[in-house]
Length: 99
Image 1 (cartoon, rainbow, N blue to C red):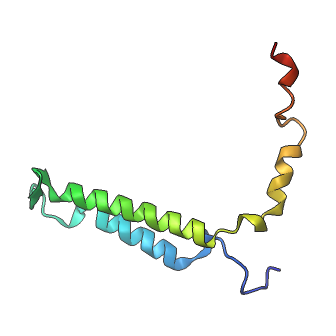
Image 2: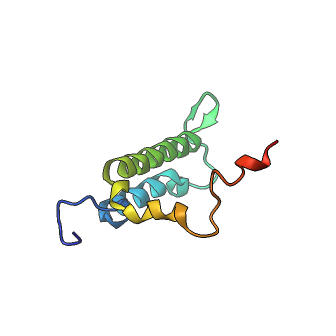
Image 3: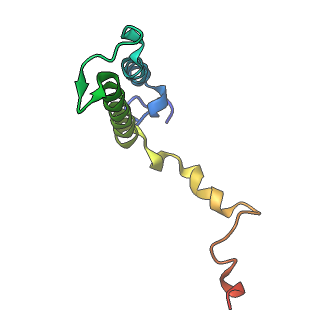
């Protein structure tokens, strides 16, 4: 199954996603503005603030889209076994202690 090219890939293995994340971060940090300048203001708030807010929203949207579109949780069948490990709390373990 590892050789199946049509299988869903983990988002972390997609190079374009890393390029998009780094690009959004570079745009969101106002390193390109001259020091001490406020630039244009909108509602008496400097432009760099709005640029940072839009970049944060874009970063969140790209990450959510990538996870929802490409992350196949059903492919990780071994995750369902984590509940049955010894020492892990069971939802039924505390039922008798509540009186």
